Length: 356
Length: 210
Image: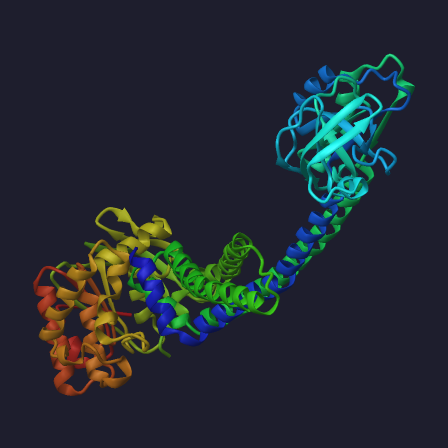
């Protein structure tokens, strides 16, 4: 504790050197946040857009009705590790408006499984003979309100509400949904991470164990997942290289500044050694003094850059990222101070204390 | 008791400044180390203060060969048992007089509060109390040397090493410093003064001529 206070006093007593160290570290933080920080934000946005496109989805289809897609298979697939949700869709049936049996039909599909969060419902629950209508299907059927009747070749159906579906289920907006499904024509799976698509798809196929493998068509977003990984890798590599370069520059500049300051304080360290400072005490003192200036600089640089980016772009990096960069910049400054500190500690005190 | 046992030392290979020196410093005595310039008076103080290590021979405290100690233990020895008074005071120009005097508490076990209390006592004794908040650049040479003396005495060391302590002082201040050093010797401390001032040599109990 004594040395921390002494380091603080030394930092105050050497304002130029302390200010230069603080400025270098502030600059390092500001440059990283305004370049790599923006890259990280851009990377997040690009990845989010790719993810919106369904990098995590798997669709298993029955091409000729012999694939053996069953509700039991859906339940078993739901238990595979990494599956976020899974639903089964039955065969489509044409629905025409009850008031206009000759009008344009919309497809009605029975659904099996818990409704995923991408489907937002409004109105009564689906059930046998009761359906929810998607926005495009409502337009096709000429429904101004999501209520009414429809006819199919198997009987009447009551439209009791509406739904809207987001990606990767947005295609359902053209349909009506009903329940329950007994026969399935397709199974739709969303996995937790793009990297799991291939593994989950393989596991799902093993669960299905179709009698006729040629009857099963599987569409995965693996190619998209690979693009995602490539984008992430490229942008990540660029960001890492930039951070490394800026930190390296900070390391060199801080090291030179501390070396200059230490060289100007030969008598100071010689006197301290004569008064009883050990070599580790001298090293600790120099590093602590540098770290205090660096902490000040990191605080100013990170906060200033974050606020500036917030005002200019409205998309500042996450505070967590800013904090991580600040910590990294301070550690880099301390690392830069270490060699000059060692030089100061091992310099012969008698050379500077002797008066000719 | 500090003893030198056949000590050899030089700054350059094959050019010894101190050759085969053996001496026993008596506790409670003030010893003058004297001789012409370049004969190693200051160097001897640095050897005894463990800032230099002899080529051969030993600097002992009692039976302990101090040269064989680790850097940490040598530093501890200096922090707790040695008080250095340098020829040019060697004060930190960026700190106040009070901060200069209490500096050594950083390297020993004296709490800052106790160090400040002792420092104020010493400043009263050496008539520099009014300069406590001044920077070294704002005091005279004599005051600077007395401040250095205060700093050397803060840890109440049993070994005082003074390198030309009156070199830049007026007669009255020189007398004050010498009287103080003699007083410290009277308190059973070992006081070693490197000097070529015959007046100081005259008042010392023992003289080591190099």
